[in-house]
Image (cartoon, rainbow, N blue to C red):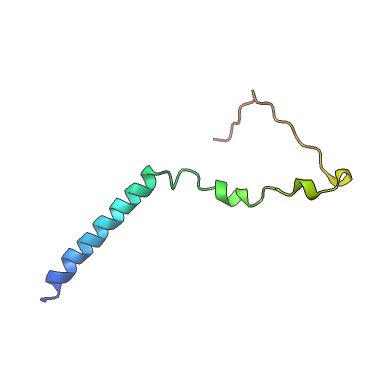
Length: 70
C-alpha cells in the first residue's frame, strides 16, 4: 500500500509529460502530412540516368485545374 504513494504521482507526471510532448508535436507540424513521406520514396530522382529513347512523356497538368480529391 505504501508504494501507491510513490506510483500515483509518478504515473501522473508521466501522463502529463506525454500530453505536453503530444501538444508540442502537433504545434510543430509533425502530423500535418502523414502521406507525403510514404509517397516521396516513389519519386524518381534518377531521370538523368534514363536513356532519352526510354523516357516516358511527362503529363503537363493545367495549373488552373482544381483537384477534387476530398
